[in-house]
Length: 158
Length: 276
Image (cartoon, rainbow over all chains, first blue to last red; front, side, top):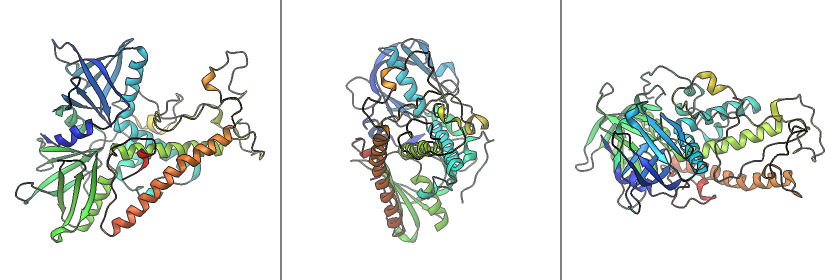
């Protein structure tokens, strides 16, 4: 599958508050913990070899499960498959907590739920739809029903 | 760089709805011909394949750091995604009619993670304001105002409910979980804006319990109302400016020139609210 690699690499170079050297272990049997510069940018987790400019890889942080493994480490599981479980070792319990929190909150779907919640609540409290002023009240992505678990349907474009 | 594709395709096919899909003509870089492709927009990802029923995805475009533009080149209903930075691409598309063109431009403009992040922050602020306005005179933040408001007791004295940060359950979500206000108070970490202090008064603070830690009380000699209104003004200015930019961008768009929702190079507290 093609993807806009240069643009994604450029994205990985954007400043980020969550960037640190962590121990990282891949999901495959025999994978060992390696020191990586891990960086959270939007809903992607990039990981670099220390002092390299281009990331080794990018993990999309959607539909994943973040779990604490022990006091200083956490894991991210994708596709609910053990074969896609990445382990991250931090320097402290606090750092571990911060990373877990940040990763969860970086998810686009998490943010969308928040948005829908605030939109609904603001409308309930004030009678106004806060998205109207931005001209985006009709956008599918911000609809209240978007937070519901719907059967996948072929929504056609206008 | 390795992009873990299975994670993306899994996300695409999971139960959360897509944000938009339909046919567009994608311009080939080399020979400037157009190929019809079926595009699926979900979050900040634009996938494309030959036909809707295809299992095989041809590609994906991550929509961060690009300007969405509408153009009228060659009499076509064209649009483009221009990535900012040396050596970065511009993707060009054409739609079959004006309506399709407009609809895609609009959907793509609000697709980025950055955009959503700003929007959520703004709504969070509006929500907090709305809750404060609803609160009765009992709240100590209002006590020095003087005007006592008669309002029925609400759940105001509890920590402001927010969407639960489901640590383990990030996959499935039920309707009730989204629309209810859960009791755990977890807020989206406002990295740039200072956090509002939790409200405390006799109704909530246990009299015989330990005193809340130092950081949880407003500072001594500090007028919370004055500070809050300063905070409100300061961030309000930024939001007002962002709104003005947005509005002038909309006006400009009517003249064919779109505003830019790219990721800014410098991420200072003020910068993150600028759209250009």
